[in-house]
Amino acid sequence: MEKKNLDWANIGFGYIKTDKRYVSNYKNGAWDEGVMTEDDKVVISECAGVLQYAQTIFEGMKAYTTEDGRIVTFRPDLNAARMADSARRLEMPVFPEERFVDAVVRTVAENQAYVPPFGSGATLYLRPYMFGSGPVIGVKPSEEYQFRVFSTPVGPYFKGGVRPLTICVSDFDRAAPHGTGHIKAGLNYAMSLHAIQTAHRNGFDENMYLDAATRTKVEETGGANFLFVTKDGRVVTPKSGSILPSITRRSLMYVAEKYLGLEVEEREVAMDEVKDFAECGLCGTAAVISPVGRIVDHGREICLPSGMSDMGPVTKKLYETLTGIQMGRIEAPEGWLVEIG
Image 1 (spheres, rainbow, N blue to C red):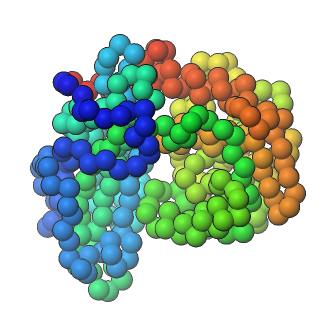
Image 2 (tube, rainbow, N blue to C red):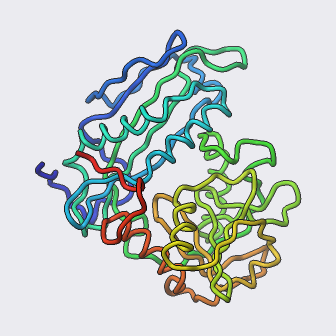
Image 3 (cartoon, rainbow, N blue to C red):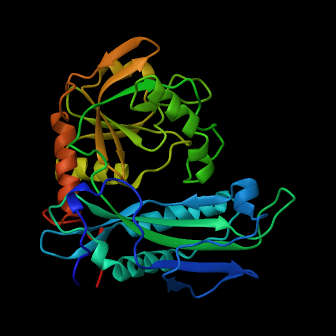
């Protein structure tokens, strides 16, 4: 299929309307069969559950052109499972996981002309999401829902190349111990907007959120999990019931252990020990790994030994290996890449 005439190297990380999107509606206790449509407009009641009580969940994922010209998406089964968990937590009907994967594959297939070519640095970003579409006045779950998947080509998350970030320990809490931090709900991101804008106004790239109960343990940022590397080369990620289980982070930990032979640990990480790590990164779908060079804790600076100019050596190897798998340069574990026919 002929590609769209886009300036792939300069499209940025934003929304570009593509040709088709997937839509399925839940009504009278069942999902309909779903359709592909050219209509990008959502029409709902002014009293819809999503507008009144923020009943909405979403996923973020990508499709890639591999080195040998195939179009693939990365581990969609894990996104399907995570959305199912999110739906249960917000009393929303689960969109069947096998149908989720099929909807993603169909959306990519219908928009192949927008999948950037290999080597461009760009990818096709996919946004599956679900929201309460039925009218609700009393505080209760909606009785009607809509599940959609749209796509948009995006450039590299960091235009001009990766640079180590400067982050601050936030005065705000991201999630309560028994709240919704472990699911991908829109409400979590709404409450993070003031915190991230405050960080930006103060000259920082991102926030480091600590646990809300004791404010002594590292959790995550507003949109990424933390990954640390010890001075003896162990890869460590924080463990908490209020951290979103990042698919990128889980994949990186597998790569660290199975591909690179590194020791990995998922455990509680005390803020007091951050100063002793050699490297730090933020991992998520958009950028894979963003290196952190400096952490500021209310005036106290922690500078990672990996420096402020580039990724640390272990972080860089993790990044190169995982992106190599996604782009087809390195053999993927079974089931990680789903090819679009």
